[in-house]
Length: 564
Image 1 (cartoon, helix red, strand yellow):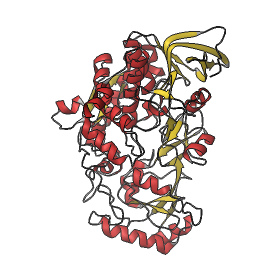
Image 2 (cartoon, helix red, strand yellow):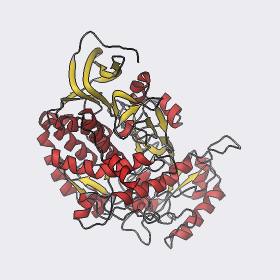
Image 3 (tube, one colour):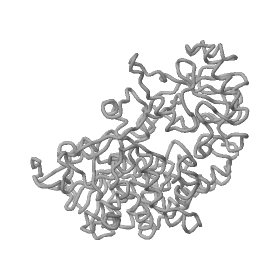
């Protein structure tokens, strides 16, 4: 590393965290709790990062809250679950490290900052019941409603989400019939929580962390963008940042933690690292690849695990806070009754109610023709679906916004309008309808994953929450486009069990840590499910903060020695 120490420092702390999502805030809280001064740099004007945009789920096998609720589980079972689905792309020590420290970090933040979480009842692992170590409930946790007024001056500087009301818990949503049955939700409860600014799901989780950081005396700086790391030739010692066009030099006496999300708002990195060309995004403009840009010049190594693109829709007129199009993920739309997804051949190609199936299938390349046979693709839905279910921000029974969909009175007319073979599309729908009538999908086993019933099904629909025939005109087609993974990427920095960033020589870069979405998912390999990202951010923040404070955890070493 070539030294680039400035002549003066504008700000300083023992630990400097870049990014104010779960990873950065948890690192700063842990460092402060272990005797260090801590500072958080946030490029946007609001705290919370992608954590606040998430559903707020934290997936931790063997957690104490499930045990207190009488649910049998273990961290070891969770480790086996991840290992069995990692497809060889994970590293055993890092998978075990997360399994060991996830429950520890959860209890630590409960005790340290008063984080209040609860198991989400009847919310199964993705691969339940198809994996022996999957569970039907207990591993998914969410926060109890958080009173945002306790944030003081930071209340209106802590991020909300445009994707789902912050006043509902999962239990409120599922109890009202799920995402498909918005008309059955308790809007009186929602109004009460919004009036009191009681935040749930992702915004609630982010708010708990912000409050914890405030209480621990963490210096929170917004509107300041990290531009480069500073080193003295031996170690990373600070950050060159910008605020209002001016350089700000920030000294980090014990370490810098890079804790930003992915890079999907950077079109070049999206193409280079995720193989996505001209993709849309569900997240804010600051998710632009800062982790690679910062760590690269000091030798930080990057790696990638398999990760499919997401699919989404853009509702005309919906925008991010910077004026760019706001894309919505298609997961809650694709697996509803009276709905299918077809490719340009007019055929279904996957289980639409399980995103790991449909997204990997959408990404398929036919090497014989150098084409993507499943892109473009369309959601096809009938009048029943429009009468019963929301579509993005359009309520049941409302006309879809102009420019979003193609509408027709028959399947053949619809096929002609989107350029799909009419007979093929008709045959596809007839075959799907025959199975849907009896609650089965012999082609792709749609409706066999309980997770899919909760997240993209109608819990009040029988015989299967994810299956319903398409029979009633008018018929609609909405084109799906590839989008980024909501700030979650398969590419990231390589780090060790203490979250120290490794160089291309596989040695730690002194003074440099990474957490959450900045770290490549060697601790999950090829598997990913909601809740893992928030759990990783919490755990990585805990581990990096402890190590920077000179009190690294030795639990992994103890476990490995015991098993030797």
